[in-house]
Image 1 (cartoon, one colour):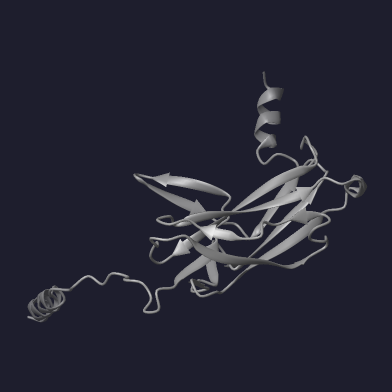
Image 2: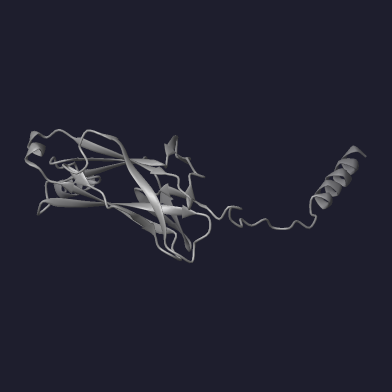
Length: 194
């Protein structure tokens, strides 16, 4: 008898939970602003038709050892959260820290633009390859996004694995030292057994 009572209660709860629910869609902010964040990711994973971006942290490492010329360009993606616009919109990136000097060791463009109809733009940092880098010391630049009339920091943190990442700032580290390639151990191991 108890078993029958549990079955009846279970089916009743199941049927009560199957009501008509209306889908809720994001329609943008009331003041027509969008969110903006640094979208630097380390790799991607494909699952069916979708791409998953794997974020490890907000630090990008660069070796200038193989750079030919005076400058290396470092491109950092900036993504939009919210609606795309029918007009170009400027966004603000400032240097908020580092061990190098803007104008002397690196340059940033005067203006950054999120193109109309797009949800992705790039911040291009021109890092100067100077003689001072011969000492092997790692230099860094920390950039931060600032709010303006078009963009707000609606996403400030992102959880990536076990880490919480601040997506309103990014650090670019660089030197003349070659970094050990990520999968060099696979290459070395396979070469030994040939």
